[in-house]
Length: 178
Image (cartoon, rainbow, N blue to C red; front, side, top):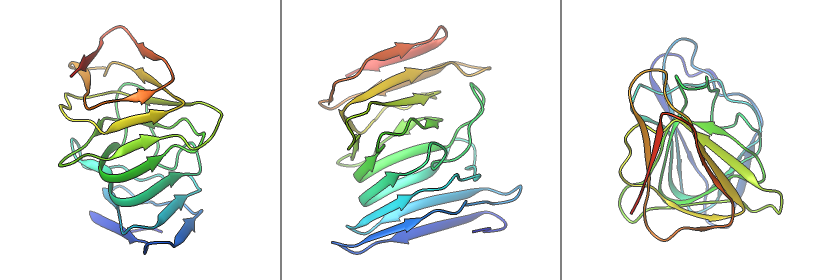
């Protein structure tokens, strides 16, 4: 899907339904945001080349399940400089055994959940950019925080997290626990 200039792609999957998309989501040189709504499951099984507006969520989960089906399903990423920001406001982001790289991880309102439905661990690598509210993290998930090339990088984990993996904080990155 090539959405052209600044755009928002909303996927609304009904309760009890599942939809899968294996193609890329592109935007040329423009910016794109992907919003998951509805109570059903949306699977992203292909690499996505989209990027969000700086300091905005590129991927927002506002209901149901958004399941990762490819390591770059949440977008491409350059270590320490850019990554798609992910906000799980309600619903569930299922890493599904994949290890994506993102900018920051956030939540608003009641908060959503990041989980891994597979026995194989997922590693979520993120830059973190001063986010103060995060979703609940559950399951077999490892977290890696890396610094930005400029400025401070920090991520906050709050709520009751019960993930069983490890946390790696690279030099120059910070983690706040609430």
